[in-house]
Image (cartoon, rainbow, N blue to C red; front, side, top):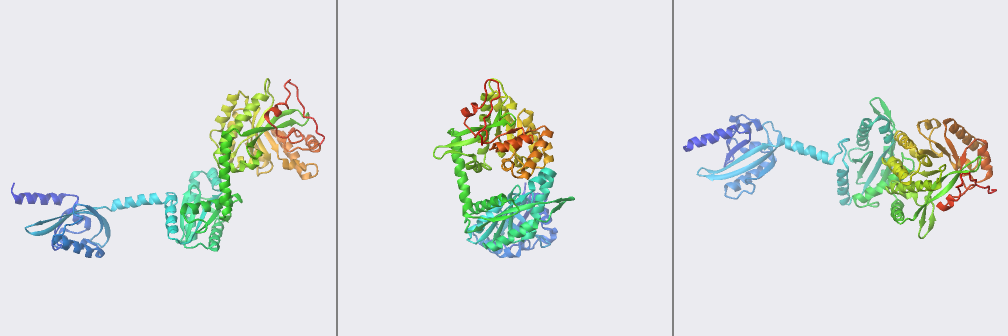
Length: 566
């Protein structure tokens, strides 16, 4: 095959390729451009041949290009030859777009030449940009995600500039999710993602850290008055309902405020400080803001230390269940016991629950200790009910247990392990815990009742449950809080409320247990209004297992608690 024919075939092959090809001479004039090149840049073939290559190079880059070509033509070894490089190029209409160009340079008898293959990488860049947005932005709201927000916060703090961090949690969002479903909940989060930037302006950096938790960075300002003003503006803005698809949704906010550098010089430290303050705002009832104080961190550390000691106490068998008698008020016969946890502290002696249980809030250790209390209650039920069974053992559930998907399984396993009839066990839960998630609570309580286990509302009357709401719950027992019993002889309102609760329970087929009975006069009033059962110091303080067993009659009779004369 002769040379002219080979050259012509190579020319035809290059012209037919989809990949853009171009050849320029030592002067930078275009000597060859295939059809793919012309289509990519928006030119006809006759508009390209003989033109300067700078026609496709943005003006700001032309100087560097001309100098590089001159050096290569003079014999300098090109550093980028054969390597794909991403640069910007210019179309015929003046618009820029990204290309990937691979250069090749050679010298022949005709002088210096340069060729290039060119790819339009606009789609790749758009795809990369989308991936970057996905990596740095919350897909639901379009705000910064946690990773990106923390990166921005770290960058601001590293510069040494003062700044303000607001941690925000939505009050009432869970109710919206439970009532209207997750689609409405997601739409509400999106609406928050619109309202916050509109309210705070472009200078504020806003992120969604997860769930219904948001963070706001106010850069270049560590002024507490400014932080207070912005937090107050957010709370005020949330007083206006969110309108979604015909729904008017009420939503509040709780805000924790931390200032840099006084409350933290690093991103995680400042975030933790704001989180401590947020927790305090939530504990105050929500729809409020709180500034971080050093005592908050000390308090949190104290709780962590207490949890560590409690974990060791559980492992070392330092925890013990005490049992307080429950009696039939008409006969004073013992009908059951309430199981109450105590800690035999090696240094401080026997500790009451109030000294250590608050540290278990939001801790998985609460479930571990809770499962242990159920096991102990079932062990007591097995002991006290031999040879025949008629005594109930009541034990309190931790909120974490009540929310656990394994509650029924663990209760069933404990009953089977100790060979206990389900009706011998009673699980107590406060109305406040149940009402936090009413639908889920009803389902959990129904599952417990399906096992045959009794269910009691503890401290009834101290929360927000309406009397009619009790119809939804599969209860067996209503425990009347000691606050109504203490002054039942002298406060007509307490007596009237207690009487109404007893009458309602009777109509609903529930047992009523009055707590905190300390004197005979209180017992007399309760008997007159028809209360069935009671517990309190009049009948016995919480006692150890063997002392509690001594309170029951093993002969089949009904052992009575004697009067103390108090």
